[in-house]
Length: 158
Image (tube, rainbow, N blue to C red; front, side, top):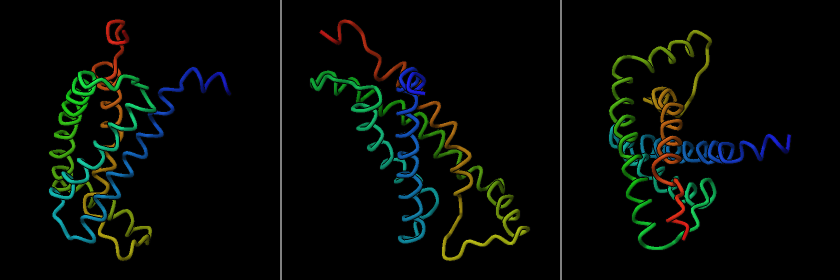
C-alpha cells in the first residue's frame, strides 16, 4: 500500500486538492446563489475565480512542489496557470448554464421527486450540471498543470 502511494503520490495529492478546489467552487457557488441570490452565470464566474486562486497555491506548493519563488518563475507559472484555467473556466462557464438550459438538472430533480427525495431550503439550480463538468475539468487541469505550468527543466532548477 505504501509503495502504491509513493508511486502515485502526485496524482493522489492532486486528487485530494482537486476535491478541495471543487468544494471551494461548489461552496462559494451555493453561498452566492442561496445567500446573495446571484444568477447562475454570475455565481459560476465568481466561484471559478475563488477556486482558481485556491488551486494555484495548493498546486504550486503541495502537488507539483514548485520550489522556485523567483519573480520570473512566479510570473511564468502564474501566467500559464491562469491561462490554462481560463481555458477550462470558459468551458465550464459556457457549459454549466448550457446544460441547465437543456434540462440536464431537471432530469435529476425528476429522479429525486420519483424517489421522494427532497432538499429543503437549498436552491439546487445548476448544481447537477456543475457536477457533470467537475470530472472533465479536474482531468484537463491536471494535464495542463503537469505538461505546461509546473513542468521542470534543468535550466529552471539552476
